[in-house]
Length: 505
Image (tube, rainbow, N blue to C red; front, side, top):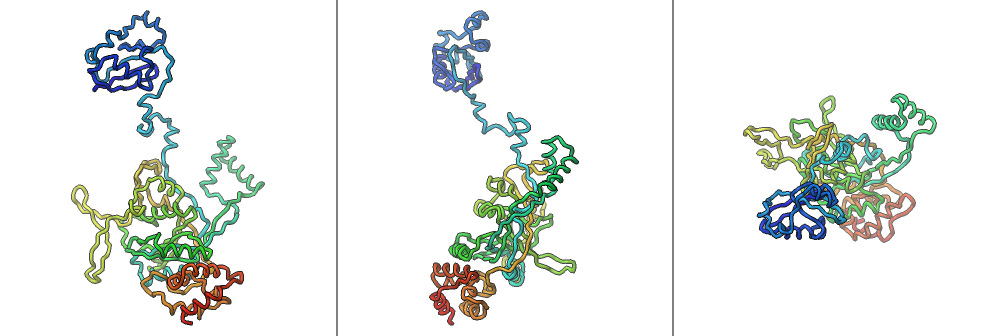
């Protein structure tokens, strides 16, 4: 087989054919191609001048040699054709030109080929920091936050990661928009470009507009977390593993909805494990991609709260809550497959961990590992990287990189506190200690002050415990009643009798 190039006024096409076939058979092949025409309406030649003019009389005047009918009966090898030979096809008929095979391979062209500089810039993925979060603040119900941090601090000793879902409410309100420094500069540039002003004149124009028309108004969203639900999970020093779709988690979602709450975020603690010698950001690559995954699933108003320890000025350990979101660009790139992720979990892999047994406690622990470089020398491998690995290059500060500092993705969210509408004090499910018992139910009903039975039962963890003692549909009806207690509603008498019987009252 040889490859013949057939050139016309519209471009060049390639055609593979056996060299033993005749020129007539080549002509038949050409006529059957989309870029061909009737076999009697075109002529072939080895002289490129044959396609320079459409008029036959000019070809005669220049004595261009065309392949004759006698040549059509000869084999291609006899005519001296081999791979790469160019045959010029001239024709008199009207013919619709088609894209050449090379131009048809747009998807295979290298980045930047046949592009202007402006088009190349548009296609580049430039990573930048987001100035502010998409929510105004997140407020915690004090008792819920205290019970979570007390467990990871006093019981787990910050040696193990613990995860919880935040259930609560959202409020939206109008307020005057306060522009960041970056937004102010961008607005000045826009005014300069549109009106041809100097920077000083543009700044004065913005100031005058504020005085005459007032500040712009924007809708802000504030989150109020009343409940922390801790699903069944197994954790180590780096991560908590849980099933988001297990039966209890689905029941918890339905119960929260019945109580008037929705899933607004998540909370987890960072253990006091060794994070390596390299500088680290507030979140690891694993945590950044987890946030991106959850924001992609639950919406742009979803927040992530991290509980961590820090040493104060007196070198005493303190516990703090920090709230974050990842930028909209981070979520977008996550959805488009830019991050290097574990196929099973959908988040960044944790570094290789070496399991060894502690001789004193006989328990399995995770430690920093060492890896050998090309020269066989041992080098430390951090368990807590400060950069997120990418599968495609992105531009950071005018450089194409495959690793991005996690701080480029993270946006801090202010934290507040409030008094929630849910009762507290009932033992939390899925913990090592203390377990939930009927005695806790009886104690809650007896000791809680409240004008109605519904107010005493308005406790997420108590109602989730009741789901194991009675029909779930009945508990959902009770939960809706507790949601209405502020308007004078109460639990039906039949449910009161049933719950008192379960509690042994």
